[in-house]
Amino acid sequence: MKYLQDIRDGHNNPKQLEDVYQAARQAKEADEFKADLLAGYQESPDNILYAAWAYRLQAMGPDQAESRSVNWKLAIPLSVVTGLIFWGLSFLYLKYRTDMVYLGLLWSLVGACFVIAFLAVTAGRYQKRAGLAVAGLAVIGVYALLFGVLLKREPYQTLMVLHLPLLAWVGVGASLLGLKSDVQNRFAFLIKSLEVFVTGGIFMVAGGAFAGITTAMFEALGVHIPDAVLRLLLAGGGGLIPVLAVASVYDPHARPIEQKFEQGLGKLISTLMRLLLPLTLLVLVAYLFVIPFNFMEPFRNRDVLIVYNVMLFAVMGLLVGATPVREDDLAPNQQALLRKGILAVALLAVVVSLYALSATVYRTALGGITINRLTIIGWNSINVGLLTWLVVKQFKAGPALWVRSLQAVFGVGITAYIAWTLFLILAVPLIFNY
Image (tube, rainbow, N blue to C red; front, side):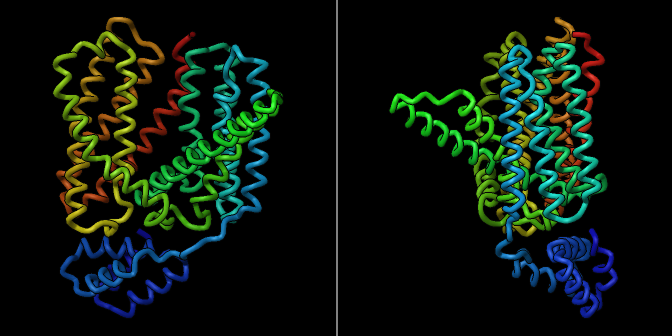
C-alpha cells in the first residue's frame, strides 16, 4: 500500500494523481499504484476521479515489459555447480546407504541456497537479507543432520525428507520478502512459486526422458554406462533444475506482485486450477455420500489417513492457485462463480478433514502419541483452521473484497506453515527420544 495515502490525498486533484502515477512508472511500480488506486476506489466508489482512473488502468492492463533479460551468464554456472554438488552427495548416499539421508536431507537446502544467490546477485540488492537466509538454512541443515544421522533418529530422518524442502522454500521467500512484507506480495510469491514448481517438474520429466533414452541407446549397442556417469545424469541433472527453473519464470529485478501472471505457464496454471474446482467439488460431494458406508475405515487403516492428508494439501494448493492475484484479472460474473466454487470446496474440505482429524485423534488416544501422529494432527489442525477462517472471512467481507480476504487468509497461512515446520524440525528430536 505504498501509494494509497498519496492517492487518498489526491482524491480531488487530477494533476496530483497523474504525478503520483508517473513517479510509480519511473520506479517500475505501476502495478502497485494500480492495486492501491483500486483499493482507494473500493473505499470511495462514488469518487468520479477514482472511477475514471480505475477504468483507465484496467483497460491498460499490467504495466510490465513484454520481455525480460534472463541472467543466463550467472544461472548456468550456478546450476552446474549445484549439479556437481548433487552428484557428490549421491556418492555419500551410496557409501552410507543405511542412513538414507544425504540426498534426502540436503538436496533442497543446497538448491535453495544457490537460488537465493542467483536472485540476490541478479537483482543487485537485499544481499544482507539473502546472506542471513542462507546462514539460517545452513544452521538448520546441520541441526537436522546431527539428529538424523549421528543419533540415528530414523523417524526424524523421514520427517525431514518431507519438511526440509518446505523450509528451503521458506528461506527463498524470506530472502525476497523480508519479515515485513504485505499480503499482496506474499500471495504473489505463493502463485509464482507454483509456476516455478511446475516448470521444475517439466524440466525433471524432460531430463528423465533424456537420461533414459541415452542409457537405452548405449545398452542397445552392448555398452554399459558406469554407475558414476548414471548418477551424473540423474543426480547431477537434477541439480541443474532449481536455479534454471527460477531463472526461467521469475524476474529478480521486480517484486513478486510485479511479476507476470497473465500469460504463459502462469496463466495456464491458474486456468487449470479454476477448471479443477467443479471437478473437486463433485468428488468431495460423492465422497461425503460414501463415508457413512465405510465410516470406521480411517479409524483402522493408517494409509487412509495419509490419503486424507494428501487430499487436504491438494485442496489448499488448488484454492491458492485458483485465487486471482489482482481483483481485475477476471470479469465480475466470472469472479462471482469462482468465489462460490472456492467457498463450496472449502466448506466440504472442512467436513472431510474434521472426520479425518477425529480418526487421527482416536488412534492417538489408543496407541499414544508418535512423531507421525503429532505431525498429522498439527498439519490437519492448521489446514482446517485456515479453511474455516477462509469461509468466515468470505461471509464477513462479502463479494466486494473477496480477493483481498482470500489473500489475507493465505498470508496468515504462510506464517502458520513456517511456525509448524520450524517446530517439527527443531523441537521434535528433543521431545521424542527415539
